[in-house]
Amino acid sequence: MLAYAADWLNILTRWFHLVVGIGWIGTSFAFIALDVSFRRRPETPQTGLGTSWLVHGGGFYHVDKYMVAPPRLPEDLIWYKWDAYLTFVSGIVLMAVQYWWSARAYLIDPKIVAMEPWMAIAISITSLTAGWLIYDGLCRSALGEKTLALAAVVFALIVGAAWGYTHLYSGRGAFIHIGAFVGTIMAANVFRVIIPNQKIMVAQLIAGEAPDARLGVIAKQRSVHNTYLTLPVLLMMVSNHYPTLTNHPQSWLVVALILVIGGPIRHFIVRHEAGDSIGKILWAPGVAALGLVAALILTLPKTAATSGAVVSDTEILTLTAKHCTMCHAAKPRHESFSEAPKGVELETVADIARYAPLIKVQAVDTDAMPLGNETGFTAEDRAKLAAWIAAH
Image 1 (cartoon, rainbow, N blue to C red):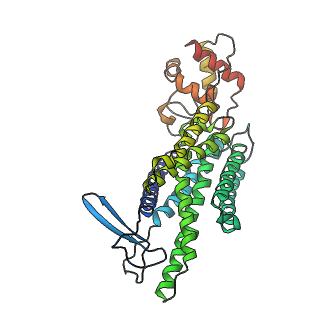
Image 2 (image 1 turned 90 degrees about the horizontal axis):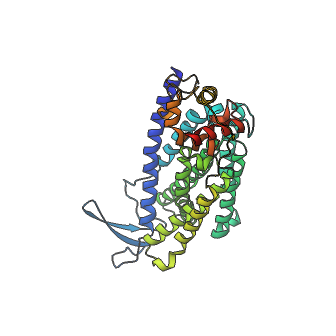
Image 3 (image 1 turned 45 degrees about the vertical axis):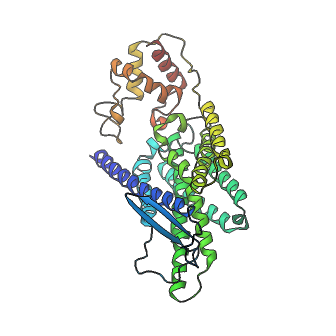
C-alpha cells in the first residue's frame, strides 16, 4: 500500500511539476523574445526604451518598454513569479518522493560510494544550496561584470558539480542532481534577485524616488542566465530515461557537451529573434553541431564482453531471478514497486527474449540495472547475459 501511495504522489507531483515548469519556461522565452524585439519608433514614449508590435491569436499587441520604470504605475501591474517558485517547490517534492524516499534504489550505488540514505540526502541538500551560494557570489563579485569570463566560470562550476555527483551517486541520481543543481540556481535567481530587485524599484517609484537602474540591470543579467541554461537543464531533467547518458563512464563529460550544445542553440534563437543576420550568428549552431558529434562519438556503445560459453535458458532464468524479478515481476518483491516498472516482466524465457534489446542497453551496454546494483550484479553476470542475448 505504501508503494501504491508513493506511485500516486509521484504521478501527481510530476504532473504538477511539468505544468508549472512549462508555464515558467514559456513565460521566460516569451519575455526574452519580446525584450529583444523593442525598437525606437515614432510612437515610443519619450521616456521609453522602445516599442514592439506583435500579432498572435487573431489580435495585435502594442507594447512599450521602460528601462527603469514608467512615470506612473498602473494599479493592475502583473507579476510573473509563481510558475518559477512552484516549479522549484514541486521539483524538490519530486526529488524527495523519487530519489530521497528510495535512496538505496535510485540514488546510491555501492560500487561508487557505499553510504547510508541519510548521508546521500544530506549531500543532496547541502550541494544544491552550496551551488546557488557559489554562483550568486560569483555574479556579485567583480567577475560578474565580465560576461564571457563569468560564463566560463559558471560552465566550470556546473561541470565540476557533475564530476562530483558522478563520483558519489548512481548514474540516474547524478544526472538528476545536475539538473536540480542548475534548476536551483535558476529558481533562486527569480526568488532572490529578479523579483526582489523589481519590488525595490516599484517601492522607490511609489515613494516618489528615482528607481535605481542598477537593480534592473542585475535582474536582467540573471534573467539572461536563466534563458541560456534552460535547454541543457531540460535534457538533464529527462535523462533518467536514457542510460546511454546517465551511465556512461564519463557522464560528467557528457554534461559538458550538453551545455556546449544547448547554450549556443539558445543563443542562436535569441539573436535570430533580435533580428541579427544568419551569417552573424551561424557560428552558434556550428558549435552546437560539433558538440553533438562529440557526444555521439563519446557515447558509442562498446562491444560487450561475453562469457565465451553457451549460456542455457535455465542459467539465464536463475540469473534474472536473482537480479531482476524482485522488481520486474507480476508481483514485485521490492518495497519501492507495486507493479513491474514500465510493465516489463522478466519471469520467463519468452519475457527475456521479448525485452532483450532493452535489457542489452540497461544491463549490458551500461550498468543502469539493477537499480543501485542492490543485488551485486557482477561483470561475469553481465558477460553471461551478453552471451545469451547474442545467441538469441
